[in-house]
Image 1 (tube, rainbow, N blue to C red):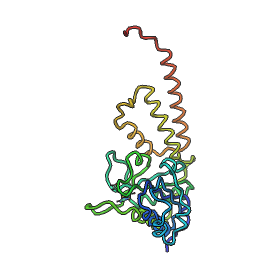
Image 2: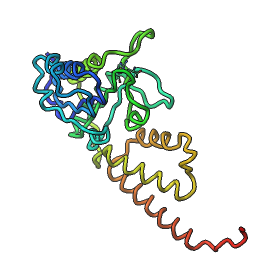
Image 3: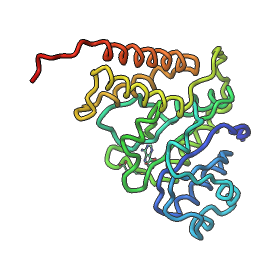
Image 4: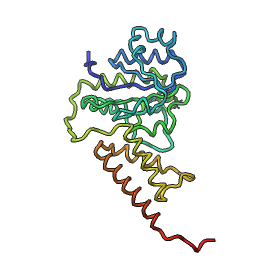
Length: 256
Ligand code: SAH
């Protein structure tokens, strides 16, 4: 049997699951593979008899589940967020397969940093704005005829690859700074948007895809905490310079 110990820094996040039975089946799939940390964002029915029934011997995973009221709360302290998606999206995002998902997740786990693998609703999957909180999207390859797996089966495949890849040696890359968390990144994006509006580069009434594209850029770079601090300081300097400029501008008397 493959090494199944040591997935402590890995959490499975289920967003707005409708059926308690799927939560139970997902918990069972996790426990079979040695993954124990379950986060539920606004589940429609939980706890439920169906969840307990379908979990069979994984009742402990359900009992330990953390219920959150938003995705942001469920992933706040995560340095790597991977969203699952059954289909292509409007803005393409870095897309990986379950093996690469496992490799990246195991590497983070090995470094002691938190990873969330996020699963969507049974009927609609994850919304675009939720997927834009992710470093990567993972797709389970399927027949072209029907790409959408049952939620718990998707959890099973992703967790199985964690076990499957966990016997392989991990790359020994070391970094001088801890990775930025989802919360750090979201604060940075808020600050960036405010600043872009302030300097007149971004019109919130005509946003086009500007913030989505910038989110994608920074998730792709995957900044560390020090780099985030530098960028926040840089934005603050722009905020100050820009408000002084505005104050120093001569009053325009030529307008009616
Ligand atoms: N109809 C939805 C799919 C929902 S399936 C849609 O078109 O997006 C429920 C969840 O199972 C998805 O949100 C995703 O988390 C997971 N899932 C199902 N099929 C998948 C696949 N092929 N690859 C990755 N995740 C998948």
